[in-house]
Length: 260
Image (cartoon, rainbow, N blue to C red):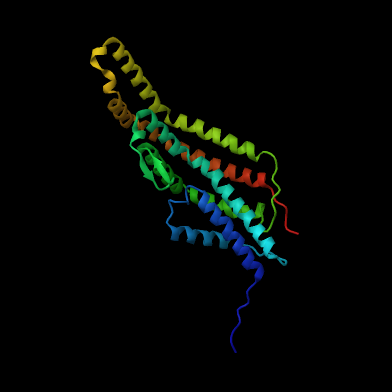
């Protein structure tokens, strides 16, 4: 007699919804997006989904299943995008330095961002992402994603509350402010160099100082960029704390209506 392996339909539906949420998060997050090889991203998606899956009881019609999958995709994408805002700090700070120093003209393709960026933008981004992962940031993201299944059950409907839009606006403004503060040591040196070249051009116009402006600014940026490296540990610690707060705020802002 052939053995029959029983399959619980509730677990199958729960696994499908969990995979949908984790896959949307992995695509939206800059840490697990283009930077991750596809096999690693697929393995992570199914591993995390297996840890957070729970059975969905009751008979679910195809339309209800599609709606539940769309809700979980929205939750995963929102969590990945909002937490990813904090991780864009390094690329934004490096991009500001590239723009002021003139290195933005030498753009290179950044596979982690999916677009072209300056030298310092890509360098800061790769370094910041590496420190975030080494410091346990990836485990923090996965832990928050698994915990989202408790606050926002896989089969629940959303009931958004006020404050989520304000949270996103506040995070974007904080990102830009922190990026400028992060690049401020290099920007200060470049500003003083600009003032010095302006005074030199005023009192010695025959020297044609501005012909040397671009190479001097690039040399100064490369020389003093080390002053920004000392800010990386504090920035990574702040981002890890911010990721935990933002994930909790997003999950509470989305709200949930338990399944009937």
